[in-house]
Length: 362
Image 1 (cartoon, rainbow, N blue to C red):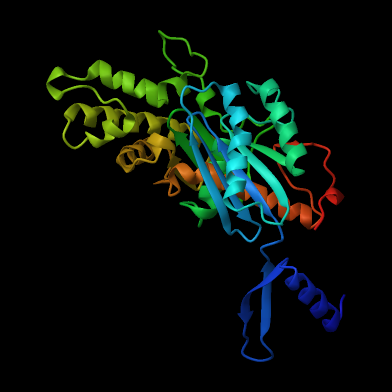
Image 2: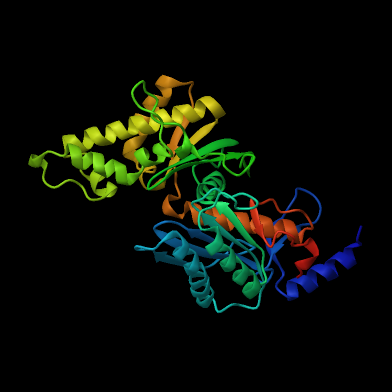
């Protein structure tokens, strides 16, 4: 227990070094007013990075959640192992935006479209990624966290997007790939080996005439297969078939074929959502991803879920293609704050894994 003069002196010194900053004033009905303090601009910053299949997005934020910079790099014809090498370039570009101010990098969180476990034993491209992580830790002297990209998006929608008023949420990504993130009371549920939510691995199809195929849900629900089905059905009288899912959805109002294809895809997404509801019984389903976030799917998905299982609210995500990178930033800030307070930061994968609390200093 500190005396008021001792505490005031400590706070004043921390404020002088920009480690603390006043954020508000509390005024009660009686008694003196009090000043509320938060972390200052020099308390440190974090980087969240979304290393996807089509792009790399990176965002730097202070521990006070002030955005310091952002970078977006499209990936064209880049192999999975090659995109890992671009992570370092993205971070270097990001730091140039704010001149590497004299404050420590507290954590770096990278979101990947892979199953993330403590040892990455199931991860494709692991041998290419590990040297990158080693160089990052050596260059910036900060812990590096890895997390699944859909888990990050789920966390962002939970705290900053469509799911802010709910406690148990599943986020379904429907786009180039298919996945699900599960958030309960603000915490990610990752499963025993990090594979919770990998709905793209569900056995599919179930039929007397066909055998389930490896990851066929992901293949069937993905944007490439959707466009292939559209091209196969497209009548000559409606011009050339759509070349992108955006073009397909844009034609829904004028084209009966586009309308029918999107309607069927909504039913397919609804079937998948109903299966997830039957297992998890969530309070809310958030639809995200390049296809899932489209409002034109929502009525059809809701109808199927209502028909096949008990009532559950289904909404579109609010954060669009920023959900994953914002979730990565959130993870990095939560981890850094826990370490600064002497607590154990929870993460799926941490490099180096033996980092001690006392190695982080102000």
